[in-house]
Length: 114
Image 1 (tube, rainbow, N blue to C red):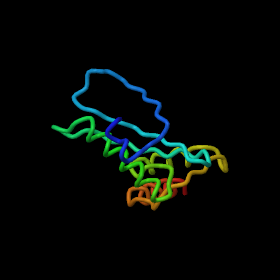
Image 2: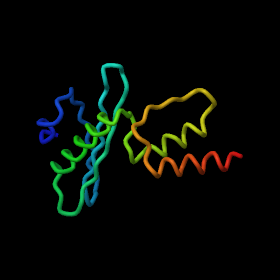
Image 3: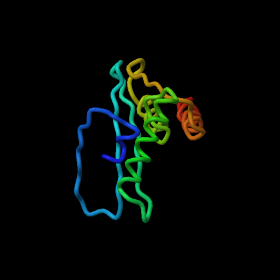
């Protein structure tokens, strides 16, 4: 986490999980001044270091904040699916620009509902 300090300077709550794994992964969650939660994830590549994963996650988080969304691009379609399955007028989410995968997912969700 120290390698992200040039990029991020949040109050840190560090949770670690030590399991037998061939690589590293990191999820970052930041709370805005309006209490919105922004998140991003990164996974290691073969030969990568934990510091590389931390930097990738920090850059992804900043990229998502810059896009104006609270859901990272990889999870947009999952959040949209959960909203479609939920009760009417209960959930709302703010995303950045929708990905092509999210457009296709929405098309399928509503095409199946008809």
